[in-house]
Image (cartoon, rainbow, N blue to C red):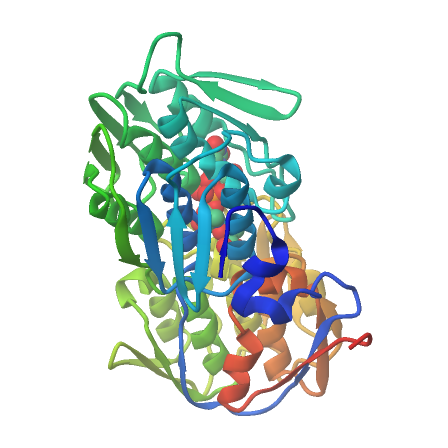
Length: 448
Ligand code: EPU
């Protein structure tokens, strides 16, 4: 299917069963207490695919991305790029993005508002068009999500940046045809700022150094794509990234890395149900801190094929603190907390969230399922209970929704999970994958 204008229905593609997920009556019913067994596979990484898609703005040639997961966030990004003039064609998990003609440098607020990551368009738009007007995305359920570092870095590259009426306008100063390289020191290793600034710098005149850059695998994936498009980048995956600007980039054919957060969630599904599962398509180096914690909790992990075999019979309490990569990822804090809520024996787990200021809302939902958790500031103290009990719960953000599904797998009775508009943003057919290995999860809609 092909389009040059944003049509939600046509971009929905493989995720057409997700269209009604914002309706309050749509929910998952998770029958708990079943052991899982068999094999499942991880899809492509949402957070990589989203930013890789925006790189299509950097070249007039077609960018082919493979292993793109069928998610509502991917659909939303496709709509935003289409509104800017990129021709987006999707066939299964392959996306072709033809950026030959960019018709405007101002993505509409109604679209940007649905997808925070779309702010990252500002870097490639500015580099390609010499101007970009992108609405500030604002905060979300998990925190205020500032973009100060993105803006500071663009100014270092020579852009004039103003923020008025909720819109960030960045432009090249009079007469300049390209951004100019510069030395950027990020105050915090922001993933989005590192990605935005890399995309701005690849077409700049001269050399750019980004210090205190984010180390996340998605940053390395973006560098891999940009290099495949002809960019000159060194040091991605280290705190110092050096970019020598080039005059133009060409197309590329590139496969997105597997989703490390989905991988962690599926491993946790095995752990919380005390099962043995093979999870395929995992890059273990992307999950170092998570695998260490799963082993500390008592799981055994063995490499098998392109994935891991996980086995769990009992779970020990442990402490964890979220940190930028290679530390424990904030995106797996909620799912891991569901596991710790079921820890066997005596012992208290301490979970400290250090990245986002409001990312412990799932605690109240887990408490409704009988979890024993005390919250003090950004620290949760968890004592395992012999059995969680099913209850109606709501996922308050994407990862909290996954945490609810995991808790439901372990609970006695049938848990009803609402908030699927979050879940479907980041997990490709989670219920189908889990049902294929023995879970019993039904998507219910009263209207259907
Ligand atoms: N920060 C600042 N100033 C800035 C930018 C960030 O203080 O200018 C702070 C944030 O407030 C936060 C920390 O830096 O405390 C990390 O934010 P970062 O910018 O690294 O996050 P992001 O790029 O907005 C991406 C993922 C998130 C993931 C975080 C951290 C995408 C599209 N999103 O967000 O993914 O939690 O990195 O790893 O890549 C999710 O998938 O559920 C999700 C929220």
